[in-house]
Amino acid sequence: MDRIYNGMPAAQLGTEGWHKPWSGGNGGSCVEAMRLRDGRVALRQSTDPEGPALIYTPHEMERFIAGVKSGDADFLLV
Image 1 (cartoon, helix red, strand yellow):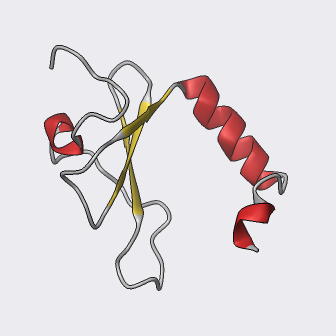
Image 2 (cartoon, rainbow, N blue to C red):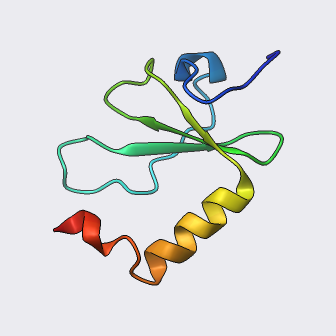
């Protein structure tokens, strides 16, 4: 792959390597994640695997996960 960019069609990243770390009893609508070769992380909506992929740096993912663990994202649940 020549260029990986935010918003690219997730299908262009391939079908292997996607995981559903947040799967649950939500009727199959999940966020899927893939670690890219350069360490970045791609996220996509499982119900739209051909749709856009959001690409995050390792630092962005570390800060997001730390924030979720500390409760900084709890406002999303209200």
